[in-house]
Image (cartoon, rainbow, N blue to C red):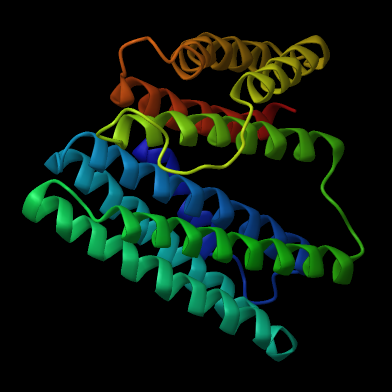
Length: 256
């Protein structure tokens, strides 16, 4: 899994300087996924009370986010300066709160809830700026993601939304979500289920069918854990399966 992520990151950072807007737009979407997962990795650290392995995973993800962010910034010309500045500012704020919360966990196991909230708000602000940049790149390149690529993106975002609420609950000492967002977990799960079923009915290669079957088997576990608030919290398995599914959704691109 780490090898796959390293290969993907190498691909992004080795794109030529003349990469067109459609390639940059894909990098921007990948950055948004990584930023979302960075917050989830933090929640996993909090849920596991500063476990050193979880901290190492968080640090690895943070380095990947920073590298991809820097790569995208270098590829954008002067006409995108406002986007670059806004995203950089949002990243610095988010990263500052992330480090502050991590230090609190390492020192006392209990971060300041207000700072956790500020971190999440900063992350949301960065994601909004990335969406604006992505939309601008799509307009300037006069292209949009293919139907399959949009499906793949939707599936990733749906799963992350479900897992985020679950891992928030695992990170909370009270066993409740750390935010008050009105998210219907069951509805999101149904959407993800429909997406998998639709693609399984359309996929023609054996490789794609095998990947979809593996995704579904691990998704069922995540779905059950996320929708049953009375079940024992198992953040390690949920996060491990989340990483696996994201990797397999990416691999599906090669067999679509």
